[in-house]
Image 1 (cartoon, rainbow, N blue to C red):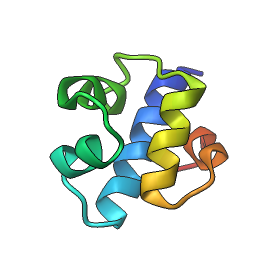
Image 2 (tube, rainbow, N blue to C red; image 1 turned 90 degrees about the horizontal axis):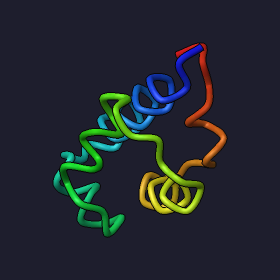
Image 3 (cartoon, helix red, strand yellow; image 1 turned 120 degrees about the vertical axis):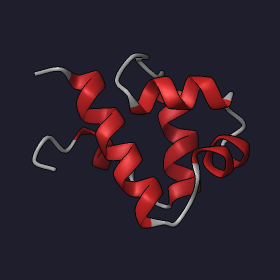
Length: 70
């Protein structure tokens, strides 16, 4: 299981479901846009703190990012 891919896919899915662009999500989560793009592509392994920031902006529990069924 490639967890970076799973996490990235789920963050992208939740971002799109909330109608946010990468730019909007990165700004609201106080992250660099390129870093967020790398997370969504599965190229970066975000810390728990970063997952917490993204979850807060997306209004989901961080555990949702680990759901491998989506």
